[in-house]
Length: 297
Image (cartoon, rainbow, N blue to C red; front, side, top):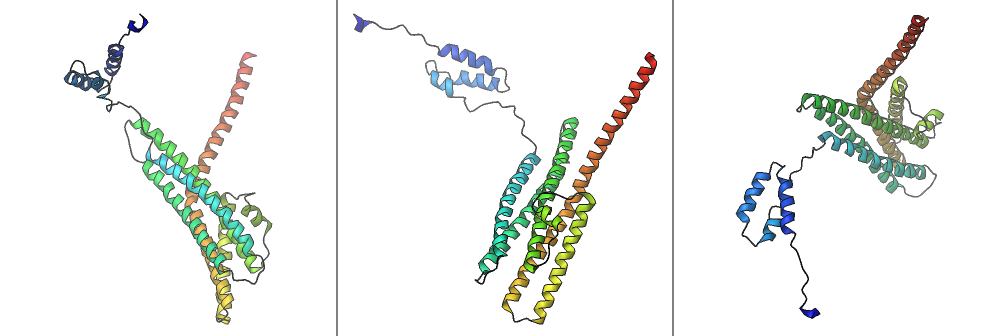
């Protein structure tokens, strides 16, 4: 008796199709879908109706502007650059130790890593400039385009400040390393900047740039003079080449710092303007409170 019992079942396919069709009628593809459903309906073949039009999906998703990708690339590059600088610090610390073994491999490794870091900074600069050019592209509606342009400019200035700060720290590290190789005394301020403890802004930062460039130029001239007096000394030539590469790196980083200064100065001017407006608002509020107190008395 139990073997002949058949459970009662109920098909829910029709209900599912009605829900799905009512959902798709609100999209711009609804007419196409309904007409194709009618054409493909063969009566019993419900599987084709269930999955036949699954490739047509209406997604009203707005993609972010192109400069968002550029900003992310700058952040990623800065992260990689910081790791490279940390690795270079270890190589510098090892290379300045006294020793008599052949260190040509270390010197090549230091030179390659230094070039990579400088190239990364230049790549960041190019991407930051690209953000500014992409922000000037007008879109519709104009109000939305204006707000995106302001956001891009603020982001551009912020990234420029980050790149400038990190490049200044690295430039000072190069200066300290150059002084150590020559056995010169190192300023306490230079050590603090190189360690990232402090950073110089505004005119102080530009003065530090000029000071580093002057030191690099003096080192190049001094090394060239020593080699000319004793051109057959191999060790002296290797040392001169290393110092020249460091001086070249310092000069390139100084140029980068100056190129980014315009954006950073604009950002500082903007912040000063905001701070000034806040102060003026506070003063006017105090005056208004005084006038209200006088009026009440």
